[in-house]
Image (cartoon, rainbow, N blue to C red):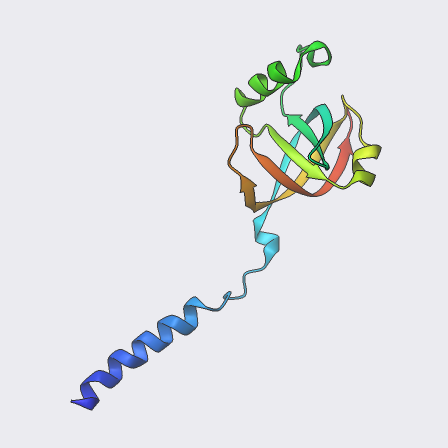
Length: 125
């Protein structure tokens, strides 16, 4: 009787051990990149953030309200809010085109989503 249970116990043990390891997967696989224009910046609940919209050609976003910008962002895939440090926030300006690297395993499911920025590079207009 005990010999019949032993193989099942070994299978369960192997499954538990393999489920608890990361199989060599690193966080670099969760890094995604988004391109777009910074159309709005603000500080909310002591968090520095900006709204990125990928396609702004022909849109006078500078004259739009936050509500209008968020509506525009919802209509375009890959628009998002990005949170960042105060230092980086102060270096960025509305109207700059940027390439943002962010951790795709951590995203708040709001619309537009809120993402934590890992790196940013200003790109030519």
